[in-house]
Image (cartoon, rainbow, N blue to C red):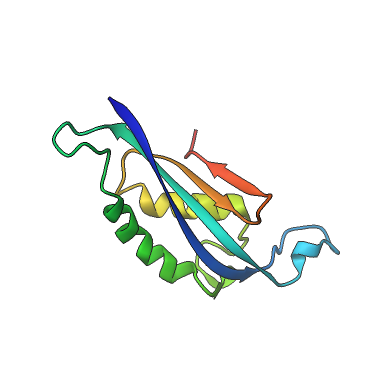
Length: 121
């Protein structure tokens, strides 16, 4: 049997997008209440009955949360142009070594806007 687990996390941060056209509203400093979905899939272990322990995902997220929460994202190395796409890839790169079954990172920038990242193709 195969399954996917999905765990939601949140962080608050400010940013600006330095590469948008002049006059674009996102070139100004602003903030978001980000929601991140971490999706891990794989075979369900017959002994434990799970793909992986939710607590392991929470533990791995903790370091990322400290890096991102209540920060000016443009000052975080690797997030100098912190679009949702780049934030999703940033999170992926840091979680993938711990979770070979990582299948998707979803970054919700607003209630209506989100980016899904599934790794390099």
